[in-house]
Length: 229
Image (tube, rainbow, N blue to C red):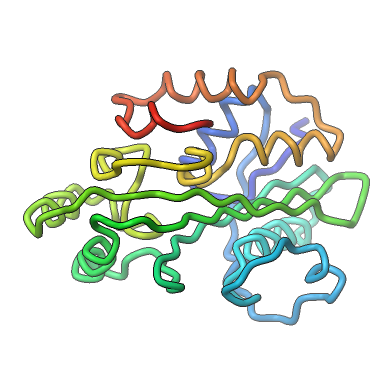
């Protein structure tokens, strides 16, 4: 029987979690879209975040994990949520190609911050384990033609900030400061720490998982060579 549930449909999170050698099942939900009041005990557990409670990535991750728990799952539950921030503005997934162009034009040639909140609901406790990881990313200066060529690949349309650092979008990234896997959507160091605190055995170390995951990529982005897992 699986002892871990990943409350996410993201193939990127699936691949990163798989690199740790864990057995798990996927139970995606739309818990992050809920607007019900958050218990004060949960708010007190959240890491500091300057852009408001409603947009807190760790809170959104908790909503996903809690939604999975409410349907009756007794296994440990892992959830994550990622946002892109520049100029104190949160850049979500693009609504359409024109919106993707707007997001990439804003990011081109500049530094921005990617936050990924991670939550684990242990099997033995009602208290969630919560963390927030952050990484700094600089995109290359981009011409309009380069932006539209990238949008034409279709890759930006389901990515926060309209780019995927582990895919074709990695060619647009000059540098990453911090955990590369934070930008992908599931920071391996944070994930291992929380799952270990929840009492789970992790077959592979963070470094081993990082190398295993890198080996699955068709072509490694140049910016990955400058980054940590």
